[in-house]
Length: 265
Image (cartoon, rainbow, N blue to C red; front, top):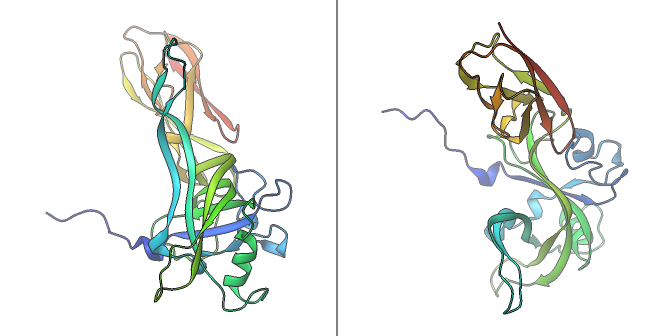
């Protein structure tokens, strides 16, 4: 049986950008709505650079994780445990050391200057979206993840004979947005042309031409007309239902909202 997918080489498609966390002009202004001009440092205003060639693939340990959380009660108190409760992000990134320092034309040198300080605050942008080459500029409609981080302790994982590099442990600083579309976050609803009593289905959403249903929150103004899952967009219309309701689709990160009118004759 022929497989209907193509296996991609992530080591040629996983792009990483770094920039100073400024929040106004430097770095990414809004992690929930990253702009191509910011990621590509158009006009040299954001300070973001593509650091992919300066990163050791073998030592990559950065990303997003869901973890269990456990409080620390006294022996007389009840413990509280939540499975996959908190979202954490960060981790180790290993950078090749430059042959010479303070050389603006050397990417390794510029990357070192940006990441050297233990308390450095930077925006990390990653893109793993199909087979887009790492050196291709970011474009509207692509999926990226954006993280605000602060540097921790430096490590030196290499041994004699290996390439010289330094490893920075990055800790979460404030916000992150996982697999967000570059550019406009305006929501387009993808709904049935009509709704009928006793039916089930799904209302989907897209942003920038990409399906982002999984990122959206869904609410209904009247569950007796249409009941919809809070996430995922799966809906049920009760048998015998008549009347109208409004389904609201919300991007909880960017705050964008789209409504769908539901009329059951």
